[in-house]
Length: 421
Picture 1 (spheres, rainbow, N blue to C red):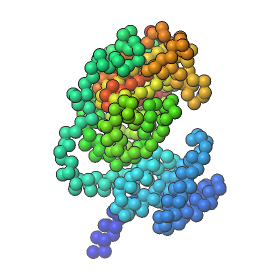
Picture 2: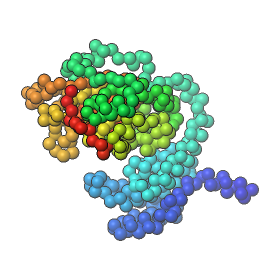
Picture 3: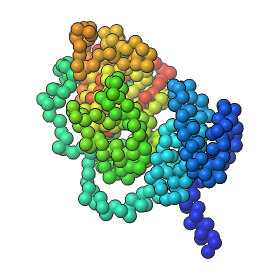
Picture 4: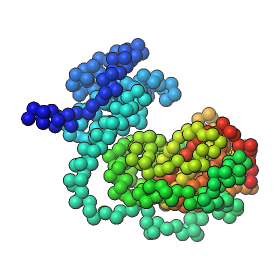
């Protein structure tokens, strides 16, 4: 009987083997950086004091926000992870599995790498317990068994679409389209010349293609998880801000979000979601094209949002494949050679972004953009768009949209990264 009780109790405990080994050296490093109050609180937290655990997390949080992110000492990110683990342990032991997941996700998003394995294994255990409770109450949601993010009712009308797109959209050159293009053909015709291309029939084997339009699936694998979202028209606007939501809350918001005058869009943009939620990572496949030139993968990011979300005209330093899983997007591209005519911002934070608002161009202030050639396309479900480094691009969601971007650097640089048309 005693052995049986031990087994039951062990299921009520979040095990942290890495923290158990590293705690002493981490606390010593934090002390060396003047974090004596944190060390005192963390020591009490390890002895079972929930208030001390919350206080330690607050101290670490303040350190993470004491200046620019790049200037934060790595040890304070690890301190935040440690405090998140202590707090999550209390929630888990009390059966508060959703709250434990929220805290653990904050540790994954904001914390350091030393304790990441503990955070990930704790997330797995808490998710399992939370889902077990969900299965018990699943009868209450049976009515939405076939709930879809995007349906045939979301089909776009081209004439109506042209009215909301930037001036002259889809009237000039379209991005070239290739079906089942070989890696050799991609390198020869697009990668080395530095030219964009629309790639079709390259995502049919992705599980995400069939799974991600299913709201119940998304809520099941990620519903309790906490993610950072952007709220506002776009990152260049004064009213732009960031929030933390559970993925279920985010899905509900984008379903109700239409980006008209009465609604502020919510966008999960450029977030490494697939480092955070392994179940979603398993649904996507890194395209073979990303191995062109001797690959160094830089990031794989999620771009999830409602119709009307806009990423303003900007350029990125890396090779980019934007894969469209659910919904449709409009994309406009200008070659890097047009940078001067696109009026980049002068301050360093936004120097890769244009001052020109393509949705409302002030011709008197930005006259050079009027006659510039561009290429554009509607990126459909199951298609991928290759965007070479430094090419300027503007993106607008035409429906609720789930996209994945793959950034990579290549030692074998294209011969002409600033290629024109």
